[in-house]
Image (tube, rainbow, N blue to C red):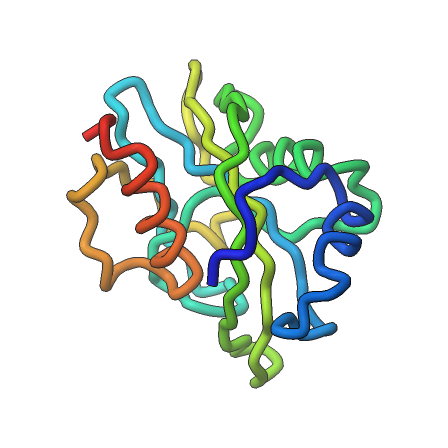
Length: 172
């Protein structure tokens, strides 16, 4: 479910924004996501590994959970980019795209988990993507808008992919 398209800077602003929203569970996690495009305007996806808590072997974009120590969402996303692709790739965070709300099933704890995804557009400016977390990432795959099999996407990534595809359809 798409929540909003105005950028919120940090957890405090997010909580203020959600204050009156009765459709959002109080027990949500926040993740920052980048839809990074390469020089050929292909979206960079990663194939989720067996060490992931949910949606193993599905395609997802780069990103992850916001930590309490993260100053703001862009800082959190830069940290996640380095954690996932290493320091040799330069992915520049460009514009805020959207925030969505989704539920996944956490296989480790055998329960549903609700997520708020804070989503940005990015560009791979230079360098090589490394698999920095081999138990969580099997590799990288790149697809132009309209080329990816949506059945291969994680549940959280499906709605985001549709939003990104519509907004950036001109990059096909």
